Image (cartoon, rainbow, N blue to C red; front, side, top):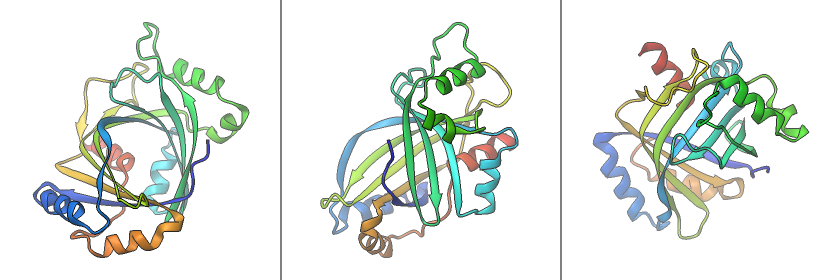
Length: 226
């Protein structure tokens, strides 16, 4: 499944500014309301051994691809996971998604076997897109709150309690020992490419400025210096 092009703006919020930003969003003329129940998001980030995706993001390359497997809530239950190829083209991006699954309950679990199983069960298109980014780097886990404007054009999420689990040096999945990415909340504002004007109007009133932010990059950094 191919997702549509969309703008995605990220705003890291220090905890001492969170209440102000939440109040701004709740009282904005776009009339944001809860769009989905809160849930935990789990993302396994994959890369090639020399962390090419990580390096490209650090370098600010405008055209890049990120590979991850995402599932929700229970960290050990990924039977409804999605393999996501996330493309970035300048200020816009899109995703290509495939159904997949990681069997964390297997007594014979190891990353090589599980990822080979994911690859084998992909259609040919997915195998071609995946390429060589098949090394597990980290799992990022956070609690996400969902909001949407009354017009349905702009979506907002708050990501809280962001932690990463290092997967680089063991064939077994590390689902116990994590590292926090810090005392902040990440606000993400998203809209389809046809609604740039609404997003610009919203950002013009925001009490904080957007900035480049990548959970994957920050996760690798945090694990490197943990």
